[in-house]
Amino acid sequence: MKRNQKIKIIGIAGKTGCGKSTVADYLADKLKPAIKIDVDMIAKEIYEEKKDVADKLAACFGQEIINPEGSIDFSYLGTKVFSDYGEMKKLNNLMFPLIYDKVERLIRQNSDKKFIIIDAAVLFDAGLDNLCDKIIWVKADSGKQESILKCKNINLAAADIRQRIKNQKIKIIRNKVDFIIVNNSTLKDLYKSINNIIIKLQTA
Image 1: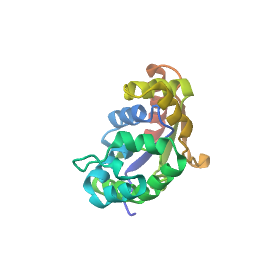
Image 2: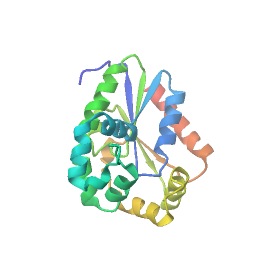
Image 3: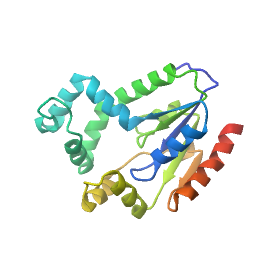
């Protein structure tokens, strides 16, 4: 993909509940002009925009995946794929090429920005790392992950949260990671870690 070389694309990767979105939001707010690309949101948009995707999901996971009005039952889909790595792999094989194409298109459409932040647990799995100039890996211990996920999913049982954390398997290419943030402390400490990285991003 040919793009404006003045744009700096920053990938934010890490497991669920580690604070990736907080890091991405903070970077997008502090680095100007910037845009954040939320890959989870991109996936949901693809589900809504492409009827054939819903049909393929129903073929893979059963008609129960589709609500009566034709929309995707994301709660059911999440339970299905987070409980079985084989099911998750089927979903990824369907979605990753579509996600990559849409992210690439959004980058082209935002050529006026100086920074583009890609928030994606599946950054490496989907090949989005190949679009990035810098990559930040966000880590947290399981207790912190559970706390963050509970705040985001108040109706999800503690056992289901632990299962999601345990079953999530994501790829990381360590020699492509430029910065590591360990998010086990306070929000203030997290912001301090991000600020240190911002200085390096602005001077690189």
